[in-house]
Image (cartoon, rainbow, N blue to C red; front, side, top):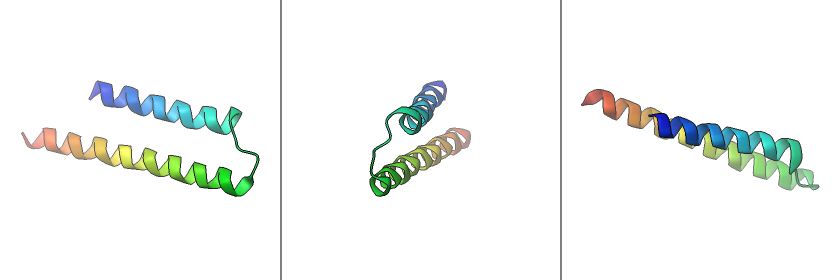
Length: 58
């Protein structure tokens, strides 16, 4: 579980860094990138939960 948490921390740090330093000048495109990135974060959270539940079954 530790490697998954490290990857999740890197994804969160990337999201914060993007929003602080690398925003796109176009607001609509920037919003789309934020939505896609947030969707990936939530998908990774669900993957971690699924793998944790699968480990608990064993």
